[in-house]
Amino acid sequence: MERLLAIGVTVECNVIIGKTLTLEQLREEFNAVFIANGAGLPVMLNIPGENLKGVYSANEYLTRVNLMEAGRNPDAATPIIRGNRVAVIGGGNTAMDCVRVAKRLGADRAMIIYRRSEAEMPARDEEIKHAKEEGVEFIMLTSPIGIDGDAAGWVEALRCQKMELGAPDASGRRKPVPLAGSEYDVAVDVVVNAIGTRANPLLTSTAPDLALNRWGNIVIDENGTTSIQGVYAGGDIVRGGATVILAMGDGKEAAEAMHKYLETGKTSPIEDNDPATEEEWLDDGRQVTWRG
Image 1: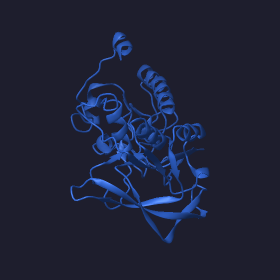
Image 2 (image 1 turned 180 degrees about the vertical axis):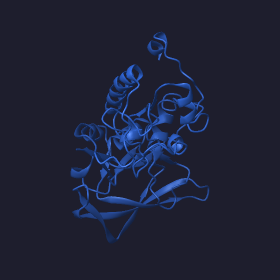
Image 3 (image 1 turned 90 degrees about the vertical axis):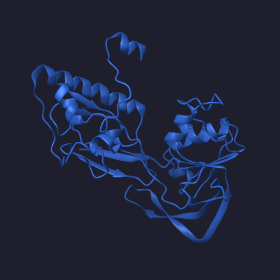
Image 4 (image 1 turned 45 degrees about the vertical axis):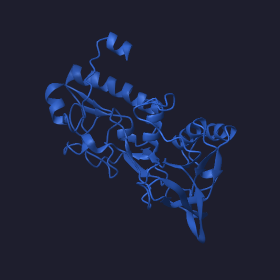
């Protein structure tokens, strides 16, 4: 931040784009706009008990621990529940982050609950390896079907059902199928939902001329150009839940395209139904994109 400020970047704090300011207002003030507000909307589990105390989304859990300092300061203004038995739902890199954080916060039992086998897990091999080295327990071919709580509304058990792998789904991976009569409970203090995130709708919901795909992500061309002239986008608001490296690349490519646009005034806004992009949500919250 200091380096950015030193070269003349202006930072406006306490602004929620789509609430405090709209995209149209930004376009009136600036010649070009880059949208990078991410995919901060959690994909919900949609199971009973999801609103009990002790249930977190992955983003909230990690943000409280790191940015809000609950992992280092027990008196942090935004605390975290340090459960002894923590279940993390999901099999991606974010799920690995959450379960390893839970272990480091002192959990005796930190568990990954994943509905496929380890071979289908989208997390990187090294993430899985490191989680195992830290003592994380992997409960495979298991799907959560409900969360039970006590009289005060605190989590006390995760209701699960065993699965088996059936025929491949649209992504090419074998689809998990519930096994009848296989339900059982796992005692837990904390449940973390890490099955993915979707596009942040705060900005896009107030920009009717902005082309979106069916998942609410902004559609762009190879230069980061949106359907609105002078407006560019990148990162998770375009890709869905992806990596920091890809977001950084999007920013650099869009910056070059914006520079050319500001010099020439020329751009080629994409159409609403861009045929060059086909995207599909996987059931773990990941999004895959083919460009052809």
